[in-house]
Image 1 (tube, each protein chain N blue to C red):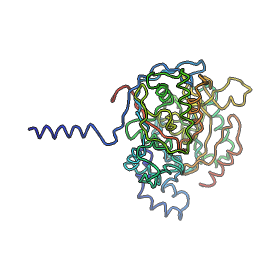
Image 2 (cartoon, rainbow over the protein chains, first blue to last red; image 1 turned 135 degrees about the vertical axis):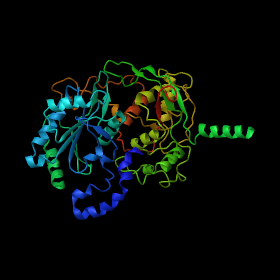
Image 3 (spheres, rainbow over the protein chains, first blue to last red; image 1 turned 135 degrees about the horizontal axis):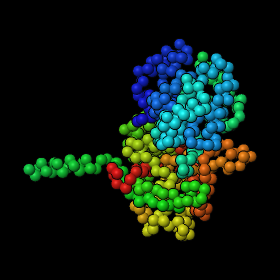
Image 4 (cartoon, one colour; image 1 turned 120 degrees about the vertical axis):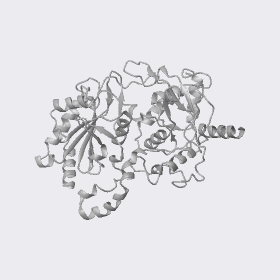
Length: 199
Length: 260
């Protein structure tokens, strides 16, 4: 089944899991994913540079992940703004270890070119940010693992809950925030802990 | 010569009737007055033609699925896709045992597991609108929802104590040939996490305004249709990895005909 390509492709690496403990966290990424990892989801992403990747490729360091769509006029710009405020609260050294991934609710409209426009207009650091799309069923599955509710309501609009989720190096959910338009200090602290835990 | 024809016919019959062939019935779709309007103006939704499994997926069908796809055995499915109670009514990860009859609808299945089952037979979970459209029919009418007697009958089905064993799948067919939409189990829909998402109220001072985006407001229509509204409320309270003893599923496919 599509969900578990990682476990099927990498069983020989189970051996590495055992040795990983001896070599610290960096090698741990070679082992099997934890059962509660969001990266168990076999999700194909395409980013603002039309680069294809898998969700599980994000493994190895903390990630802030949020869902949005480009044509949204109200809260989605605020989600980007809140992500930027959060990373600005980090030290320069910390910030280099944080990646930010946004996944669109609207794969019909959010092409890589449109995602690129958003990335440039919002001046996000594209060396660490990915604005991505996936296929429609992938959107539904990702929303289900992140506990995000969304509904297409016609005219290209979506009703959706706004949630920023912090994933640890193995894709486990370690913090969530629905405070938009302001700095959530608990989220910042969780990000700092996640960065300190992997580096 | 006859032998060859007989063998050929037999071989064709084998191809045409795979084991556990699921029975799908075609539904026309069209304009439909859902309890969840398409937008804030109480507009009808428009449903494309689709096909729906005539019965919920049973224990024996789900056992065949996990046998063919062992990554979905209850002892191998990661926690992110199914909570600990996944298939807990079965005797083991690979046997039903005496508490789970083969023809009973499978329950204690997560949304992810249900979706994976449907993908394995080139299908998907139905949308809420598709499920509601099919469930509006009684034995004779495609939309019996305005009939107080029909509503009362549905509500009486829901009053069956949840401690009694589930009946087998295969109750009376409705006007579309679909069975067990009411009175047997709750059923997952593909967009379970889409049903009760309120929009922003356009009120600058409303703190909830910032949580949502887009046009349209949460606006339930047909508030006397308690049985259907109960389904909406129940599905909306679930997470994708959740399972319950009364929650099963069936699958759907696009288009009015196979291959369309």
